[in-house]
Length: 189
Image 1: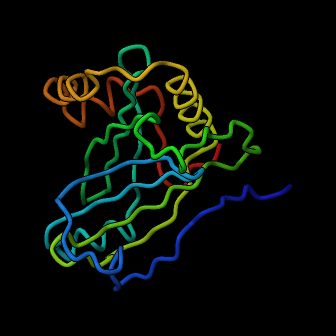
Image 2: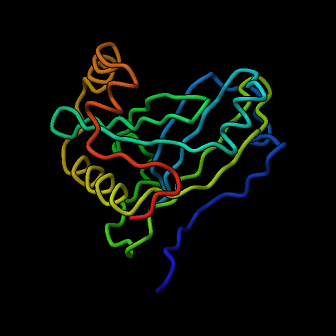
């Protein structure tokens, strides 16, 4: 069996600037699939030691939901004893030079890797970099949703649609009641 490979991964060093020369970031959560890789970026203003430790070590639950016939994908996560949030994703918003469609042919027992970055938004320093993988079943469902989304036109009112979802539902509701798929770190299927 051959391990999946991914191209275009940049070199990052914990304790160094996430992007050399950039010291300040807006406080935000960002989920992306670009260059064939999933990434979750968390920019927190002066992250506390517990947030850093829980991001580095604790189990994480993931889910995703789709809205408006798949035009909006919301990826939700909850770090045990730590941070939880929801991140909208649209393949149409990925820079064209990094936009690739995900693979559906992961071998049994393999899932897509996810790279998690926790960046101090005040200093720009990378506090945590963690690589995990989704379960195979979650990977296949999420990848199919991204492919389906790509086949639809990008709506002019995308931001309004996302805002409406976030005004109506909490992270807990999105993860428990509206998830198309769920997984937890370390799950193998």
